[in-house]
Length: 73
Image (cartoon, rainbow, N blue to C red; front, side, top):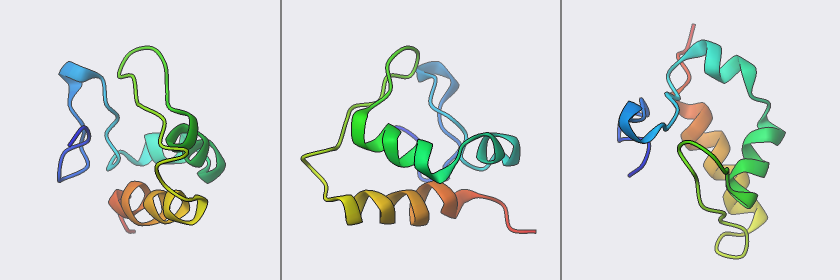
């Protein structure tokens, strides 16, 4: 919902564009897992999902959804 079905996010609510190669390159998988687990404060606040999703589910979410929007070369 927050990042859109196309993964491009919404500027109005400050969610990142997962299709942006530069954004993908700036964020390690560990950073992304931590963001999903613990949430992100500030612009585009993201809720924490630790306790709602298992570690395996969070890792799959990052691999399949966040990294899945990365443009393939």
